[in-house]
Amino acid sequence: MKPRGSLMIEHRLIEKMLAVIKDQMSVMRTQNRIDPVFIDAAVDFIRIYADKTHHGKEEDILFRDLEVRNMSAEDKKAMQELVEEHKFARKKVVELVQAKEDYLAGRKEALKTVLDRLTTLVEFYPEHIRREDEAFFPDTEKYFTKAEQDAMLLEFWEFDKKMIHEKYKAVVEQWKGMK
Image (cartoon, rainbow, N blue to C red; front, top):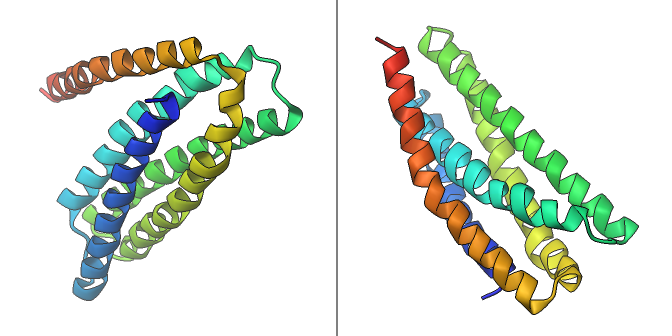
């Protein structure tokens, strides 16, 4: 498997979660209320899986290794756009969390903001994923030898092994801070 194969498999799971989010948005609209437990689960998925795990591999490994290559101006521009898109998604998640908190504080009009931020995310990710799968990943493979791609894939797996420990260390720290 190539590194892009691993990233594309992750994209398929992200797409499945986006479908779940869409379904839950319909329920929220019908019931005219949010499900804070679902919002927390969606935020956790986006932050830990889509951003920290998936985008982490892209930014901390793939993009890092591309930075030192003699990339074409077009590929450099595409990579920078992807980084900016990752930042955009992070910002929307922060806004989603704030809107959920506003809703829970009694500001029922925040339901619209919650749904707007979820809509933004479910509309944003498919195009972002398509650009990576169909253009960026295949276009940038040329910068790596087979041995370098194999080493990158191993680094991806090592990166993944650490994620579960980071996730639950953060959970413990969060709960310790609440006492």
